[in-house]
Length: 440
Image 1 (cartoon, rainbow, N blue to C red):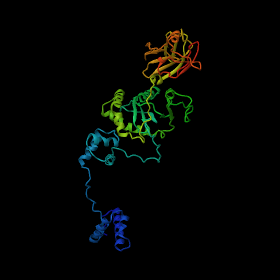
Image 2 (tube, one colour):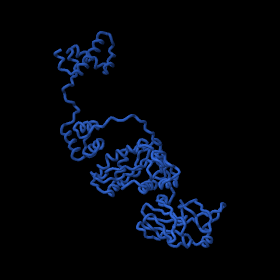
Image 3 (cartoon, rainbow, N blue to C red):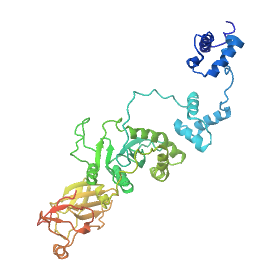
Image 4 (cartoon, one colour):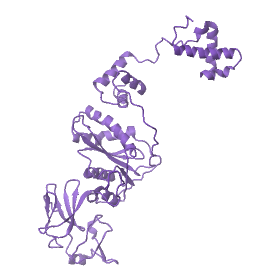
């Protein structure tokens, strides 16, 4: 027993189990295939039998004890890794830091080793145990079937300033189609992202978002959205034939929420390493370089070939993606929204528009257009100055002479072809006052 007192309790238990199985096999009580009991091969069982016969009980001890591992990392490498994390990469997560070691410094170490080294040195806290198991919603089979859109507020520029990062992500592949920093997620910033995706990728089938006030109208907090009362974004999506789907919990839009976790763990650090401290520089960095790098690392192949995106022949996206407000023209032919007032000049088809209802379009480039039915009766710069870009039609007798309008069976007039795709297929009732109603 004195010889065995140098072994730990766990080692003693292992040796006793091995000896018990060996003795039973030697006594013919069990066959040698009993090596499966110990989880070793038959060859290892024969070697242990020889060691038991030659060296007795101590021959079963693990001979690797006290010897350094052949796979151990040199101390100089350990010190270099810890030093790099403390001095340069102190705000990177473990996966991001592991990639930097491999790509920037040529240090080939396993992720598990880097994780245990940083946690053992107290540089990174250990993660808490995960919550209960949940089944992930399957992806859509093709790109363009269900893009996700949302914003994440964070200190993206590594200072006290908070900005929203608006991201549009594809459900089928997790590919990022759009990512921009803005002061605040709003109707205009969301419209800018959607318009850019439609111009570059095409029209998609449905849009998945939270229940923000710029996406949906919720009469009572916590209840379902009112699909009959459309927001400005809802009107634009309806005009383009895109279905809007509301998510009722963060877990429901977990694919984009997990993506934001990756963004928050990487983008601020990448901006710091690139020396970027402005929103304009950050957005340039995203568009020119980082979105492509992000997609190369985190996008996944679609389940089926092909795409659900379809090209749009609409040339009126700047009208569709605008904030539209109806107003009644005052007696002095002016319309106003809050503290802004616009003067409407005299048109060829009516002496005055006083008392008529017009639609004010506030475009994404901050210009403003005023529309009376199909007619643009005013266009103004972001400072409120009139630019003169109006498409008032010809006089009625000239329209009849050139045949630009034709009467239909239902007693309606089609719009002149010169208006293009702005109101393609739209029909307006005849009226001696030329009151064609609203386009949208």
